[in-house]
Image (cartoon, rainbow, N blue to C red; front, side, top):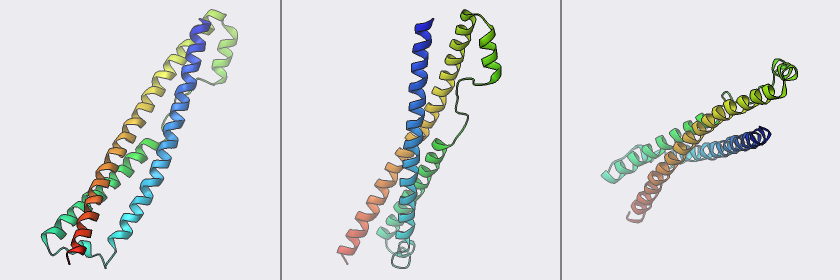
Length: 164
């Protein structure tokens, strides 16, 4: 049982590290996306908001691509917030009641209780991390969509300026 508990303890430490990794990644990603949203907002005001006053078919395409790109980046920001959301982060029981229980039972019962605590906590922690991972994955996908749309906006705008 001692080897099993050591194994579970190592897995618990790894899952906690993985949780911290996702929290840090989410935080950095959220900061990056927030800056991008600020830049996109600032760019929309260039030339007195000319992008919102389309007169040609190409200008309409640019507007639609811009709006879709802006919507995608906002969705990315939302998914990053969901991934960063602090929920019930599963931790091992740490109450006085648990400590007192472990001190009065025999070693085999205490080991079995600790085993169950590790297994239950690891299952919950893995589920929480997978949920964060899914939201972060969606945020990256939406960031990619936004980058493509805004890249096309830039390309079309440059082409329009060159052909004037």
